[in-house]
Picture 1: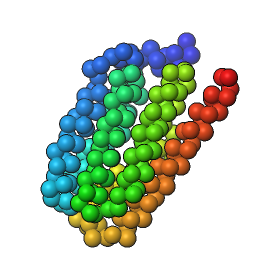
Picture 2: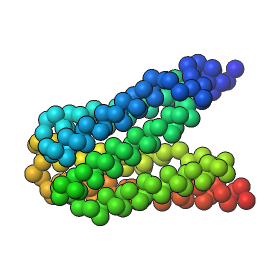
Picture 3: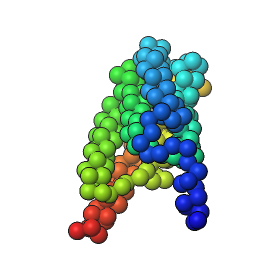
Length: 192
């Protein structure tokens, strides 16, 4: 038996599984995001707010690790990006609404995130899988940091740092989106 088959045989959950540890963490992230976003809106910077923000963003790596260890599921492939978008776009929108960050990067990030989700959906119907790339992981990290640096009491007044991180997150968001579109286009051309 090859290493790939041996690894697949050891997975605890099949693709159709719903109740998995990874999915439980993903749902907990979404549920925890709602009161966290309310705290961001109501209080802004503070240790409780940044602690909750750190927990819901750091747990993204945990649910991904569990999914790779136990077996990726279709439900997890759907839920995890939804959680990421609710958390990132919610955090950025709340901060923009409070006047803490500019609206235009939030709009650029939202358009990219929703546009790439639609693109992946269309590509998926044609049998093209467009998994997250390394640049996308860096993008997500900087998006989380864009909110985190506003919430962290040590950096709450460091507007220059916050703006640099937000602009870097916006740039990586656009670049990673272009990378996914390019990969999809190349795969489409090979199939046609």
